Image: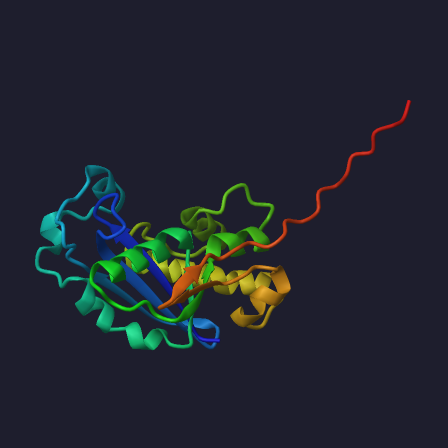
Length: 207
């Protein structure tokens, strides 16, 4: 299965304020291409908190295209691909709300949250944040640069697939109980982690 990992950075708390997108294309079990595009939000309001995270300011994106122009560059390539995102509830929400804001159709695709996947692959780890996993796996990461985050997300998914003894990303759902999220013009459903491993019961002596 071909896949694509995405990552958004936002200018403020609004899900329609995407100011950067990273896209990492995955084919035949490897990342083959990574893109990063600046986006000029409709509302050029940059929250200092967001800027402190990703370093982008209004002047950095003043000459960048708005979302529809950026989206058209790769929207068709999404067809038939599994979309990966680390903390997908955020990135898919940004995508949905921004498409709605511009009156654009949602794509039809399945998506997988790599946080959910990482918890299945490395349950022994105390945290499953992107930077923590990248450090654990030796993946180069310029954190909160959208292109670097997207590529790291893709590489984490591929590493998890190997750790779980799977040959393809498509086998993850069957092997782990994860339910892929679904996105389509008619609606969406979230990615779910399936049943947690059974807890060991503690025997209480009967007195």
